[in-house]
Image (cartoon, rainbow, N blue to C red; front, side, top):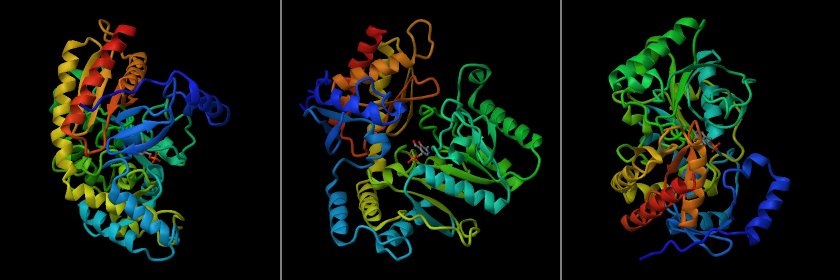
Length: 443
Ligand code: PLP
C-alpha cells in the first residue's frame, strides 16, 4: 500500500527557513502552521517537502491544484507557451485566452456572457463590485455574514467577519444579511424552510431600512474561509426573488465552489434551487491549477457598462490561459465533477464514522470534495481552534496535508485535487482519523 511515511520535520532546513521567513515576511503569514514546511515537488495528489517527506495533499494549495499536481497536460501547455512568448499584454489577441473565454462563457449559464480575466479572486470580486456599482449607480452592497471575498479595500469591506476585515474604510457601503449559516442561537432551532424564511425576512428588513438603490448582493454558495458551512439549498433562490423585485444584481463568488468541486453541480449556485443564472459570476483558484488566474463573467450589458475601463496587465496572459485551458479540458474530459461526487461521498462516510467514535468532532459537512470537520472540546462542545491546530499538525505527522478555517478557527477543511482515487481517499481518511484521535488526546 502507498504509505504515509513522512515524519514531521523537527527542525533542520525548515526551522532555519522559518526563522528567515519570520524576519522578513508579515507575522500573520507564519502562524497558520506552528512549524511550517517548504514544499519542493508535487505529483498527482502527493507533494514532497524540502527534507524528502511525502504527503497526501488534501488541500491542493488552497483549492488551487484543481486536477492534479504536475498534470502532464498542464505542464506541457505551460512549457510550450513559455517557449514561444511569456507575455504579450492584453492589448493583443491571445488564441488561448479567447478559447478559454468562449468555454467559460458557455459553462457559466449566463446568457450573452462576456468574460474578463484577472490574476486573483480578490481582483475578480473587485471587478464584479465595480461593475455592479457602475451598472446600478450605487455603492451599496449586500453581503452575507461569515463571508470572505479577498483582501483589497473593497473585498475586505464586504467581508462578513470582523477578524478578517480589520478596517471599515471601504469605498462601499456594506449591508449585512444573514447568510443562512447555522450557528448556535435561535436560528439553529429552525427547520430548513423556516430558516430560509428567516433569512429572507432579514434581507427584507435590511432593504427596508436603507435609502436609495442597492447595487448587488454578493455571496459564496458555500462559505469557504468561513468553514464550509452549508446554507440551505433554496436560500439563494429565495433571495433572488427579493433581489429581482428591487432590480438588485446577484454576484456569485465561485472562487472555491466552481468547476465541479461540490460534486452535484458544476457551480455552487446551481445547488440553490431554481435561482436561475446569476448576473455576475467570479472565479479564480483552481482554474489555473496553480497558475494565478481569476475572472468575471457577466451579461454583456453589465460587463460593457464600463466603456473606458482600464485593462488588467497580466489578466489572461498567454501562459496562464494555456494552463487553464489544458486544465479545464482535462477536468471535463475525465468527468472530475463526477469523481468529486463519488469520492466525496466515500470520504464523507469515512469522516462521519470517525466522528461517531470521537468526541472532538461536532459536525462533518460539505459537498463533493469540499468537506468540513468542525471540532469542539469534548464534553463542553465549545468550538476549539486549539483542537484544529493540533489536528492539522498531527495530520501532517501522518503524511496528510489539510486546511483549517471557520468563524472560530475550529474547522478542518478538506479539499483535495479532484482526481483523488479511492485508495488515496481511504489512506487519507485513515490518516485523518489518527490525527483526530491524537488531537483529542492532546487537548
Ligand atoms: N473569494 C473566495 C470565496 C475566497 O475563498 C478567496 C480566497 O481564499 C478569495 C475570494 C480571494 O482570492 P485570492 O486569494 O485569489 O485573491
